[in-house]
Length: 272
Image (cartoon, rainbow, N blue to C red; front, side):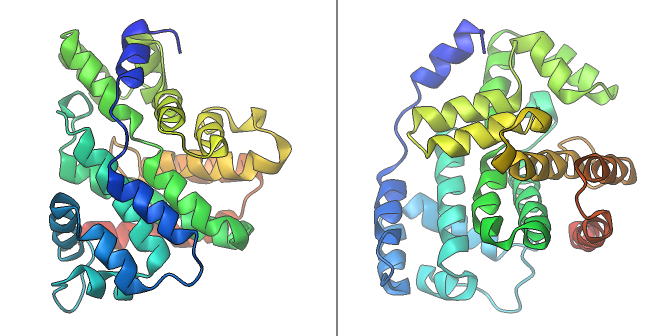
């Protein structure tokens, strides 16, 4: 990544909220309880509000209203709650206008959630031990778009960028042309800045070029790429994008039939 403005922007990002580091520490304790995790989350009113709003939205389609954090933790489980808190914390800290991508903050959140679900379900078919890790990776892999959108708006290039996006050009190529970096590269740099596990940053960076990933991590990189292609910011889960995802699965020798079933289910959920 050679865009000096992006590098400067990333290096000046504030640290992640205390809630994230506190919840990470708590998860190191295998005996941690739902009540303890809920207590940590409740210290951040903005996260609490966003979490309850998300869980009570039509997206989750829960049969009863979730009125407390502890109730949410019990329902979703510790792993899912941790991932959501990390994702919401990042988004709250980096609130920006995503118009260059034709996105609202709500549609961006939905895309990230669906990429995460697809990646987790596909990884369960390939290597179940990696399913939890890939879920968080897929949730975070698009965060670079927040910084890229901010740069495009600052440089007054949002309108031509979106025009090329709407014309159907390859997203990564457009990003390279305008800011000399892809979403994956920027997302990886952001995770490094925040001292995430270096492997997380590498896996997201490799999702741009899964064939070049180290042998042990090829399947992770392929799954992330498939998820971002199927649930693209442009026409997520459209027939065209699902076909692209199946072609990638064929190329990577991943289970195409299972991927098709996963995408069909997610497409139905997306419609609601």
